[in-house]
Amino acid sequence: MFKTIREDIEAVFDRDPAARSTLEVVLTYSGLHAIWMYRISHWFWKKKWYTVARMLSQFGRFLTGIEIHPGAVIGKNLFIDHGMGIVIGETCEIGDNVTLYQGVTLGGTGKEKGKRHPTIGNNVLIASGAKVLGSMKIGDHSKIGAGSVVLQEVPPNSTVVGIPGKVVVQNGVKVQDDLDQVNLPDPVADMLRSMQQEIDDLRSEIKRLQQSRPADGLDVVQK
Image 1: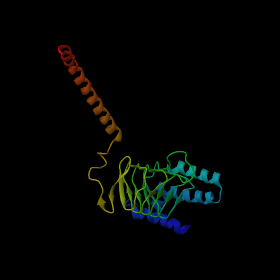
Image 2: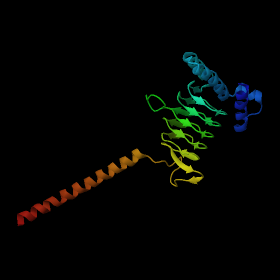
Image 3: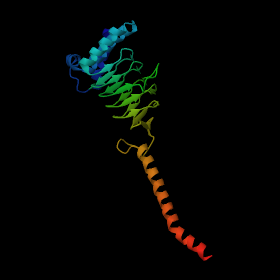
Image 4: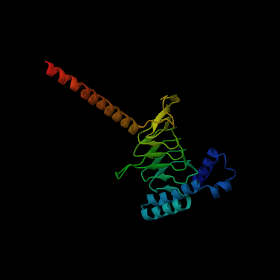
């Protein structure tokens, strides 16, 4: 237990340059408090004391603004920075040395049973406001950009941005040249533009037919 506590504190110093002293980290870091509360509630969850585990989980949420289901499986050295609004679902699995920022959701996509939350690999960084939804895996050493919505599996060593999330860098190589966090594809707008173009084409065809009809009728009378 003490080894785990020490590792959790060391993870803060490794990844937060604002951390000044152990006392400050222990007393003021809500992300660390949420992790410790989770570890206690998870112990009760494994013992099948589900109600006690959920009560502790909700108390931790009340104190920190971070909701970690006691059924989730979390590895070593998880670092939660500015964690308000983070949600980690029941069947979520998180590897070692993962970093989560404010507003991250590791959730499901509906009322499906069984494994319904994501599996996060080792050394993954998920930036502020990102949503990873469904039973898929985020590969080791990957990064999820701020505000991204990830609905499909992400290969290892990838960088993902956008809604829905797209892999833009993999193994250090840029995948797409025309995708960034500002100029993102909009399938709804593309579909509306296509429909408008078809309507304009139909109007032009109708107008052409209406204009040619009197001349056609005159030719028939002359004949």
